[in-house]
Length: 153
Image (tube, rainbow, N blue to C red; front, top):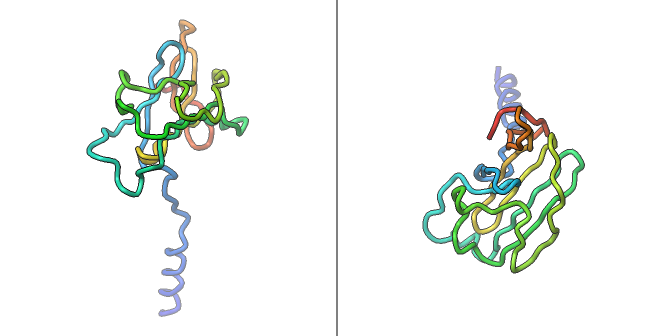
């Protein structure tokens, strides 16, 4: 009996459960024909000490081709935090501090990951760009398996 209990505890302790590689989900809207990203969670108070000095990175990764499409880094937090469609960061925005990779064209029906990390924590959005019945681009949901859905963000 003790052996079965011990085996159960060992198996339970070695479960396949994994935490997400980010703290919060970001979101986006289409603005001027390209995604514009912002954080769903309001930024309250000062940057926690453990995040101070990291700056803010914003980047888009193509999950299908396994390559970055845009990488930008800001030395400090932005004057206006990207927490709404009005204050979002447009895809391809050039940083005054460091542009690790200028924006490449995004294509429809391709799964992308947007990551913003640093002094705002780790934020992620899985997304695709789709066309609606009128031929207009819209942002749709995606997931960690690089699957584009037709469901809007």
